[in-house]
Image 1 (cartoon, helix red, strand yellow):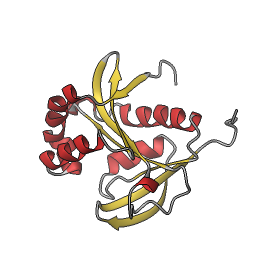
Image 2: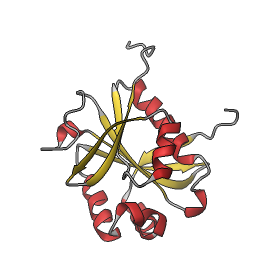
Image 3: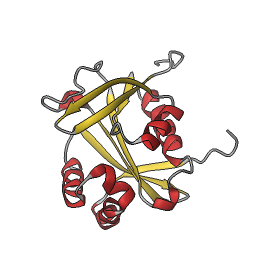
Image 4: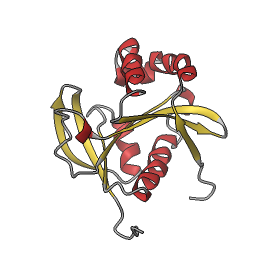
Length: 171
């Protein structure tokens, strides 16, 4: 794809929380994240949790999305701990509604997946709600495939996986 946008991933900082609160209150995010105050509290807790890496995605220096990766093997009784060791989970939300449907979600996930595979992750999982057809399509576009439908303490999930390409050399 020519002129594919390149995204920058940076750690979530306390100064980002007001922006994140506004994103979580936006109808297109709230529909899938639920209560914005609860979501923000969970994200704040993740800032100090070794199992989760909360990030802000920037395009041309402007924040456009929240992204987190997590290790399900570092959380007690995580519903995806049955995945291969080294598997990382992803969650993403595009902040502004006018950026939805423009290919950012799949492009961000694809770029971040390539970086995580380059660091040695063998598999990535992502778990949109089964009714979130837009997210499912975006993740399919990024190469993810459906592997299971689950219900857990996090709610219903259309569990999708992307395995590391076999041609990545481990040096």
